[in-house]
Every structure is written in structure tokens, then in C-alpha cells.
Amino acid sequence: MTGIPSQYALLGNALEFAQFRHGVIGQNIANVNTPGFQTREAVFDQFLELAQAGSGEIHGTGDFEVAQTLGLTPRADGNNVDLDKEFGELKRNAMMFQTFSQLLAAKMDTMRRAMQG
Image (cartoon, rainbow, N blue to C red; front, side, top):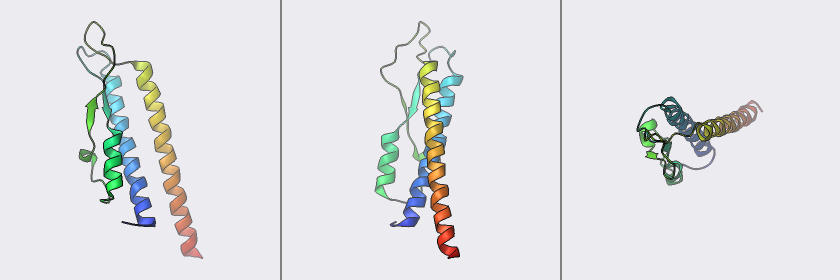
């Protein structure tokens, strides 16, 4: 895919990934008191590989990978969720989603204005 349609697909895929990532972060927060729970993260590098491959739209969240977050210190119960870090990631992800949404809306508005003349 080349040109404008690929830009729409890329932004759509980025929105899909941000939505998926939001769910992963939400699961981490929801499991803050679950003994033995290990923090997980959506793998952004894998999303980039799919996007760079240019294979078109990503179909569902099954295309995204979740991995255990490394380097976190577990508590006595084995849980390693850091609420401050997770809420920061949640806010960052929400800002990414908003940015992608605004970019897609701007592209669509430009296309609409071009078609109207």
C-alpha cells in the first residue's frame, strides 16, 4: 500500500495498538493485589515490525504480542506491579491515542475538503 490509503491504515493500526496497550495496562492495575502477578506490557517493537512490513491493516488484537516486563522488583507476595509507573504509562498511552486520533481526523478533514473543491 502506498500514499494516502496507507497513511489511514497506519494511523488506524496505531489506534488499535494504543487501545490494546490500554487494556494491558488496565490489567496490570487491576492485578496490583494479586499475589504472584507479574507486570505485562504490549510489545511496541513487534507493532512497528508489522507496520513497516506494509501488509495492510492489522486484524484484531491477536496480531499484538504481550510480554512480561523485566527489571521490576517483586514484593514479598511475588507481585511486581508499580502503580505509579502504571498510571504514568496509562496517561502516556491516552495521550498517544489522542494524538493518533487527531492526526487521523485531520487527514480525513483534508481529504473531505479536497473532494468538496
